[in-house]
Each structure stands twice: as structure tokens, then as C-alpha cells.
Length: 338
Image (cartoon, rainbow, N blue to C red; front, side, top):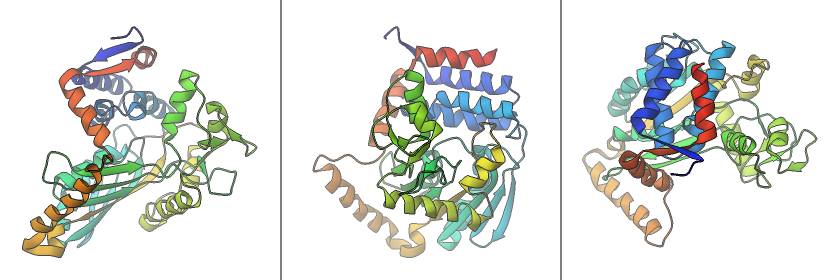
């Protein structure tokens, strides 16, 4: 192990997360849900979604923009619709409360949707779609964030990083998962470059005057860019609509306006769709799910990598040998204990 890193077991990561979140007054049910997400990010070597996010969570707790003891309320809206009012708490707890009814409705109707309202969201979406796929369902999820991203051809922030995630159940140990921001990169990646004093690649962001920049701080103070130009911009717009007005929640511009300079995590909603293959296919569902494996085999058979393959390989390593955390980040996180 390098002197620049600290090796931790996953149990130690979990204990550190629990201690910090409890120290800052987060209620026990939220401590467990958030800790599960933090550990998952670190375990899968997603640096910007691991213990780094404890800095983000604690900052949000200090601003008062998240309700520390929120009790999510599940609403059975319609035969194929579930709504969860997160009560201003973190999204993970609300998702956990709504998931069983979402799965039940999807299996009964063939398709169902979950809208999470009034939540604070700081994490990736792949834990949600993995949980839905683990129930044998196809999953789609998206959420807006704060207005940090300029539309294609624009120079002012309007969209959030607006991630999209998809899950497909597979016969083996892991589902097919992709999860990506509609921005060129997750905002946390730019933050990590800023912390490390490293330049960012061209195409990640522009400065406050709309000029391309490789300075992480300048990009954070200006605007991030969408991936794929107008294509990413169109997808970001879709997320704004179906995880904002469609479920009666905030757009990214409204979220950052409500933040009012506090620097908290985004406030708003999340949209999750679950589809049961058996709803379309009946007793032939297993046969057609097996046919889908031909697509995956054709991808990997020519040397290409499936999305999330890197994460699953990292997961195996972390479960066996723990994780390495940059020492400076570890010290900054430990300092949250006061």
C-alpha cells in the first residue's frame, strides 16, 4: 500500500459512514440507507460516489436543506403507479420504502412506475436499477439535479447532470447495467480534479464567460457541458421533463434556486420504471431472456466491454481485499467527526 493511500475493509468503510452521519444528527433509518450507498460506491471503485460523498452529505446536513428524521410516505396512486413523498429526506430511504410496492405492481400489471417526490439526491442511480433488476424486472431510472450544465449551443447552466440508468436481469451473478450522466462527466469527477489540482480534459466545461477551459475550478464556476453535444442535451431535457413536471417535482433550475447558494445536494424527484418480461411474454419469458444473452456474448466476444463490467470486477476485488482511499481524502472525511 502506498503512503498516499489508506486500505480499509468494507466493514470499516461502513462503520466510518455510520459514525459520521450519526454524529451529524441523521436519523438511524437514513444512516443505514445512505451508508449502503456510500459503501457500494467505494466497493465498486467509483471514487466520486464513495466516501467522498460523505463530505457532500455532511455539507447538506449542515445547510439544513435535508430533513434529518424524514419519514417517507408511500401512496398507492393507481394500479401501475406508486408515489413516495420523501418528506425532504435522502432519496435512498424513500426508494427502499417504495420498492416492494413497485415490484408487486410491475409483476401484476407487467409494468409500473415509481415517482419519488421531495427528496435530496446525491448519488448514482445504479443501486436503484440493480435492486429492481434483482427482482427479475427491467428497470429505467432518471433524476434531475442542480442547474450546472449548459444546453448544447448555450453558455449558461440550465440542466442538471441528469443521470439515466438502465437495468436488465441476467441469468448469472450480475445484471446488465448502465448508468451515466447526460453531462460529459459527473460533477464529482470535476470536484475530485479540483481537489487534486489536476486539469480537466477539454469538453468537460466552460468558464463563466462561456470559453472552453481545462481548469476544474473555472468549470465549476461556469458551466458543465453535455456529452455528445445536442444528443446529450436532448436526453437532459427528457430527464428534466419526466422526473420534474411529469411527477410534479422540481426542474434543475428550480432546485438550484431553492438551494439559494447554500451549496446543498439537489432537491427534487426521481422517476423509476419497472417492466416484468413475463407481462409481455408469459411462460416464454425465460426463453427470450436467454436469447438476450446472445447480444451480450456478441459484444464481449469481439473484445468489447459491457457497461458496469469494470464495476463488477472491482466489486470482486473489494469484497476480497478491501479498498484503497487517498490518504488526504480519508483525513478530510475523518475530520467530519470533529
